[in-house]
Length: 122
Image (cartoon, rainbow, N blue to C red; front, side, top):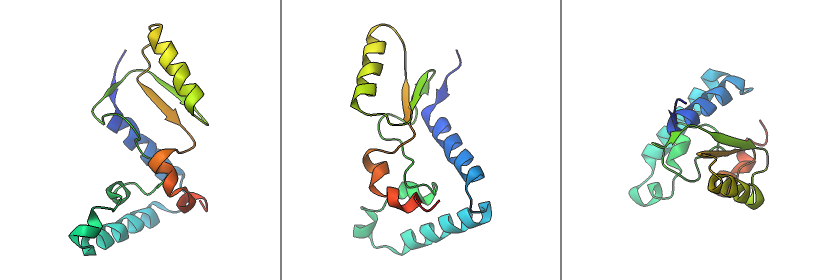
């Protein structure tokens, strides 16, 4: 079974999102340029609190919440609302020898949920 790095999967998800975005690619790229410009204007203290991922990812509800971007992913489980019970299920499956490397959830959680309101109009 071929492995793929978590970062590559994540980037592919973002690329597919941009392709399906109701905004044109040009609009999305313009938004990202504006964010980079705004970031450059911040002072050092403000930059500490800035979400640097937003400089290359136009979707505030899409983030890697846990794990290393360099992790090799061979198997993933995908769900709509992945919460505690589903995570416990994956843990139990792993105990029984099922090598699940990644959980992907459609609905955001953690820091990906913090600015969820920003994507609701899309």
